[in-house]
Image 1 (cartoon, rainbow over the protein chains, first blue to last red):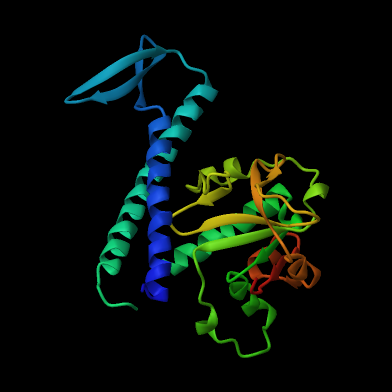
Image 2: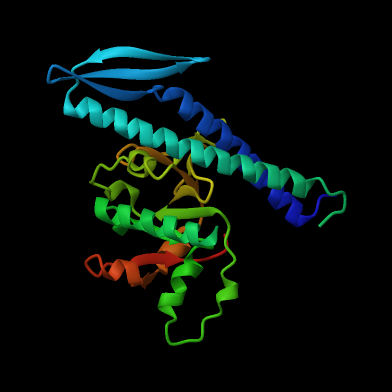
Amino acid sequence: MRGVIKGVLAEELQNSLRMKKGYEDALRKLPKGCLALREIKNHKYYYLVIRKGKKVKYIYKGKLSEEEIKQYEREKLLRAKYRKLLSQVKRQIRFLRSSLRGKEAI
Amino acid sequence: MEKKQYELCLEIFKRFHDAGILDNLILVGSWCLYFYKDYFVNIPYIKHIDIKTRDIDFLLYEPAKITRSVDIPSLLQNLGFIVTLTSRKGYIRLEHPELLIEFLVSEKGRGIDAPYPLPKLGINAVALRFVNILSDNIIRVNSAFLILHNNRGVLTRSGVL
């Protein structure tokens, strides 16, 4: 029979696994790439920089409004945040799995 | 991890307060103990008693009286909270590696076997029987961070259900 603490850890593991899936889904939904600015003859043009395999692609976006630029910035920050939290969740999963591997009931 | 948890918890409270929904919420469960150290200020407070879980529960004591529309998932999105559905019935939980937020309402009458919808807050809640025992006996705590914000308090009630 599983001990009380192991039961709690198992529940936490389920929470963390669900969270991992949640962050992976959220990252998938966020648009990829970041904006790059190029100034040509005093005009500002934006490109979306995306990595595709080994290649880095520059997709022309043209002139963007302030709101669109802020939206890209927000998404970039959110993506960085989600990545950081995803790695934290993965660490938690590793810890919980190793804690649950012991055979004795706690 | 604990320091991060506290900071995140306080940030959630600040955001709820700024959005004007803190007055509709009661903090229930193990996280009340963190705020009791401000309530029992003249009594020697043992820090070790605050054994907490990752779950932080908020009880909405009068959900029908919520007039303000606040999208809670959007409010907490840039803190890194994601919305997850916990059972097949679709209970919404806001999850973060440090904290899991759940909302509760008091179950009345015949009760419902499904999430209690709260469209104005962009979430749903778990309806539980007898949580009105907690909402009938609340403790208002003036926590240090909340005093800075218009001297509002946080309603807390810990109890075992």
